[in-house]
Length: 203
Image (cartoon, rainbow, N blue to C red):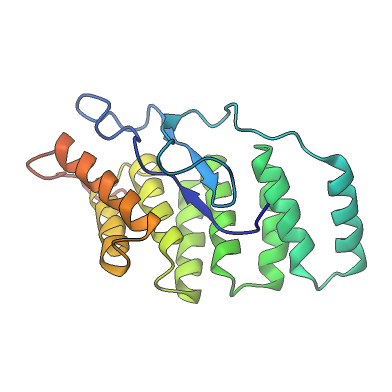
């Protein structure tokens, strides 16, 4: 499992699927970039789904022992966060990602993983605050911007803010996987709202 940043897979999410684009009834599915799910296969779904992996307790125990032995090492804490995230145990993921972030606050991938975990525990404001820290470390971090759009749309009902975040992704890297996902999201958004989103900022 690659300890990379979580990317929200955009293709197919909710935008063009619900008449009038009803926001808040479902959340976009989140996958880590090292997981098997791809941007092409994702769709809107509840937080708990069949993607959850069984937690490997032997690996957890080994990583916890390493974390205790090396209190200044962020890596085992990040890997523990990844394991708990993939098992959809987001509270525990937050615990370990937070510990890792204290040791390595300049890692935008780690910071974004933490932000997505906040989102999946119904804390969109904390998620956006964490994404701001990711962008402070790397203002062009594509996965952060992509995730920010999802949280603004689904967590804050801020369609204009979501559109702005996805536009940034397109401007930075239009041919990247993130750029292609952002384009699909924007196309779906504009299809549902041909006259513009008309959305007020959700804060």
